[in-house]
Image (cartoon, rainbow, N blue to C red; front, side, top):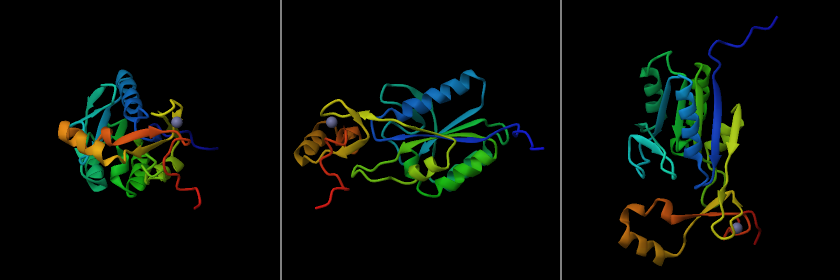
Length: 203
Ligand SMILES: [Zn+2]
C-alpha cells in the first residue's frame, strides 16, 4: 500500500511573465488569501530591488505588504532556517530573477520541508530571450501561471517587454524624474507583432 500524502505537503507555484503583467499583484493576492486562511506567511524580495522601497513588496496597482530583503540564495536559506522553524506555511519570493540559478534547487529544498513556495519573477529578457532561473523553476513546479501585459502599441496580449531605445527620452526622464530611470519608465510592454527586434528572425 502506498503511503498517504505528508501532513505538510510542500509545493512550488510559479508566477511569471514579462514586466507589467501583474506578477507581484498575483503573488500578493495569494499571500492575502493564505493570511485569511490563518497560515503563517513570509514574504521576501531581493535586496537589489529598491525601486519600490526595501522592506515591502508592492504592485503597480498599489497593494503592499511588508517583506524581508535578502542579498542572495545563501541569505534566503539562512533566513528560512531562522524564521519560525517548522512553523512557516507559505514562503513568497518576489523579483526572483535577481537570485540567479542557485534559486532553483533552494526552492525545491524549501518545498521538501513542507512549505508552499510561491515564486514570482521575470522569465523573459528585454531582448525577448528566456531569463533564468524562472524557466527552470517553472519546469519543476506544481503550478505555473504565465501572465501577459498589454501591448502599448495595439492593446493585444503582450508576452514581452522592450527597453525604450530613444536616448533623448531617457535623458528627458532623467532630468525630470531621476528616481524613475532604470525603473518602469525605461521599458514598454510589447506583443510579438510589435517587438522591434525579434531575435529568432534570421538575417
Ligand atoms: Zn501590439
